[in-house]
Image (tube, rainbow over all chains, first blue to last red; front, side, top):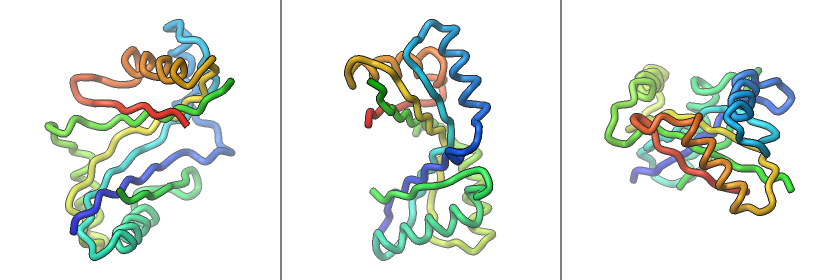
Length: 81
Length: 81
């Protein structure tokens, strides 16, 4: 069966996110007040063919560790729909 | 009050996603079978100071339309936590 797996990859909370800071400046210039912090990461949607949701999640976690994330700068969260 | 708003920005389903195709090739090279499709987008987390969750969502949607997404190539989903 094919499962849809979502992987959220975000910059570690301890690190500065320069892209997010730039967007925050842009929002302020557009007059959009109220935004206090912006962090930008990746969202990766996989279609995984696996025997169970657990196996699909395992494949996605392995993909995250081996290719999709840089553990020095990013963390990831996997969810199976 | 400060609300955490997540904005998911993904390439439109009708369009080819070259970045996703490249990642799919990379996963196949790593021997990670079972992945049938990959699509890559952005995940943006905002901290919004607003009077209600509805108002926070409205601010995030306006930010998405005005700055964060390109409607020709991307769609977005906003969720307030």
